[in-house]
Amino acid sequence: MKKFTISVAILLLIISNVVQLKAENIADLYARLDSSVVLIEVISSETSGDGDMLKKVSSGSLGSGVLVSKNGVIITAAHVVNNADAIRVTFKDGQVLRAKVTALSRLADVALIECEGVIKNPKVAKMGDSDKTRIGDKVLIIGSPMGLTHSLSIGYISRRDKQEDSRAGFTRMEYFQTDAAINTGNSGGPMFNIQGEVIGVVSSILSRSGGFEGIGFVATINIVKSLLFEKKNIWLGLDVFILSGPLALALNVPQASAVLIQNVAKDSPGYYMGLKGGFVKAVVGDKHKIVLGGDIVLSIDGYRFDSEDNILKAVDYLNAVKSGTKYTFKVIRHGQIVNVSWIAK
Image (cartoon, rainbow, N blue to C red):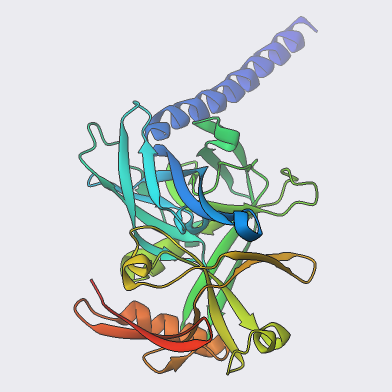
């Protein structure tokens, strides 16, 4: 009996040490990776007020990102920076730098920003291969939920999903579903595997209460590589809404669908092109809040925005435009058709 008791005690000690080792490994992993994660502060403008009191006001929002190169390239979520008039990045050591958007895919909700200035002590995260990630794998998310910087959450991959484009022959978006806690401020932050590689970028949650309910969505790192590093997804600084059906008819759009420009980010290509955002807030149906009064884009160099498929073709064309090439937007502005041109940078 005494020998059996000693054996059980030894077994419990071994189990305790294994559990402690795992806990220490997670702690060590967090300590190694955390310095690559940044806080992103965005200043953007939005329409406020009604009638004669209508005006543009500045508002601030927070997100997260991860540094992936020593020259200041940071991966984040598209919805964090798409409408940014100004972007400020804060590193773990307290250094603050301004940044600008260099590439973005709204559909996949991923973006690249680049710091303006030299990073004093860059801690770069390694990008992994998300195709090797399996359902059930343990993952770590580091970000700034509710502004609480460098917060860690741990969970598992619950599901993966992708949208293939049979016409173009490539994937337009791909997501992991996870039960790792995600809240406001986590958006754009990295998801790491237990090897310490970035395998995803936090996008959104599915919630009925407004808070986290165990269903979060993370864009895969391979879709980031495909859309932002291997291909070119340009950023114009436009917040848009697709007009179709009865709404397109009500706004006298002379084709089946078009793209309404709601807002134009300051100092963006769209801003310098002279494209105009809206100034009248409205609600479509019982859920879509939009801003009317801005330019309505009908086509780009003959690529009409009259169907979902043609809109995707137009976007592909725009992303393929080479530097120095002139392209032209045909828009409806205050009831008149206007051509707006720009030379690709």
